Image (cartoon, rainbow, N blue to C red):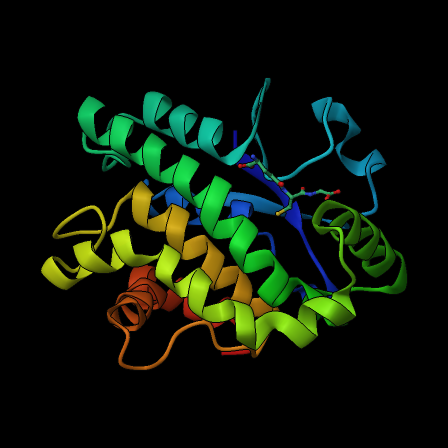
Length: 229
Ligand SMILES: N[C@@H](CCC(=O)N[C@@H](CS)C(=O)NCC(=O)O)C(=O)O
């Protein structure tokens, strides 16, 4: 039975969820295809079957898996013939650390730089839903975020130094070839590229050439969707 991935969609069918991009790239890495079902962020009825409010949601026959990390674990455990997402138990442990670092520091730092542009990619109801949630979470308005983003960008870029140091020595976070840790961090840039023209990296940043390599993977799959790049 075909895998089904529920993911956010905006105007012009933009698939803008960064967490879904982690799963999209994991599926491509595993050489799996899926049916991608678009969901509007304000339409919780469409995903009520999953018992929670977020995407991505992977459905494999009778099994429903929520949360991008748990989906990656599920794909790794159930599609063992395909290339590994983690390269074994040690790699999985380190990828879990990357997931925590990106979710707890990189994403919360990137959201105030980019999220004010997401509303331009959404219909009125979705834009209102997102704005209310983000302004409450970050205790500021989209207008203030936009005003302060140039000033806040350098501190966010410094957060990336651990990844930058690794990428000066090797082409991917995971070493010679990309794996799930790369997909986790790249999802932030992919999200930004789909919803915003605000440039997060200067061209000479070692992170920029890695981002280009990531955009090229799987026959340019991410590049084709990064509508605003
Ligand atoms: N920890 C979850 C986070 C998923 C998440 O936050 N998804 C966002 C979209 S990127 C969402 O569905 N938000 C719904 C909402 O804000 O109502 C994961 O890794 O999948």
